[in-house]
Figure 1 (cartoon, rainbow, N blue to C red):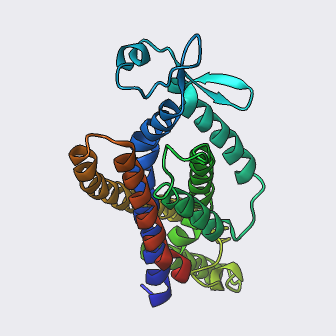
Figure 2: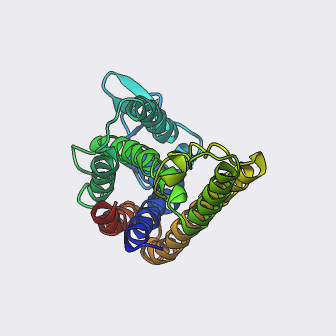
Length: 278
């Protein structure tokens, strides 16, 4: 296993370790609750839209779904605010993925992590509270686009893995022996390096090509499984840490912002090796 391959593999696994934390801690748990809390703290009770939802004696009315927040000219149910934000982020994510370039992995990773960190200084009582929706959209788009870009490295990593390299050498030897037996010169494809695309080696039996395909499939599954395991392992670690302030502060808006901000800091910090080694 070459040092270059080890460095690239470590960089890829490092990003999985970094980005999946945002999914486990923020995207699926604290971010929807935080967005709803932001909306509730700035919402008013229906039908008069005069009394704030955050008043201490309005818990029953809020539980009955009578709280709405004004976004532009429209009144939106505070419980649906996070759903609208998520829908917008998914739509923008789809448009971004089909139009991004080769620098997307680093650029969008930075955008996503920085947007999550910006939840830390943003208070729900601030007149700029609506920026929470912008930060959530940018973080989700950044995550989705960067993961798609990083997964594009997976085929080349699998192709350069030791098991695929061994399978390719066996295939080249078989092809060479077959060519010599037929009085032919070894094919040019048989002399390519182990980092060449897997286009097959002419002259080799189909069974040997199947063995090469199977080795590539196993390498892809192994590397992908390592990334998933390391990512969700990191997410569980930070989730346990984030639950401490959330529990101590009884689920306050600040504790939710702190959990989201910590996931952004983690995401940014462990993305550095990926930026350097990939």
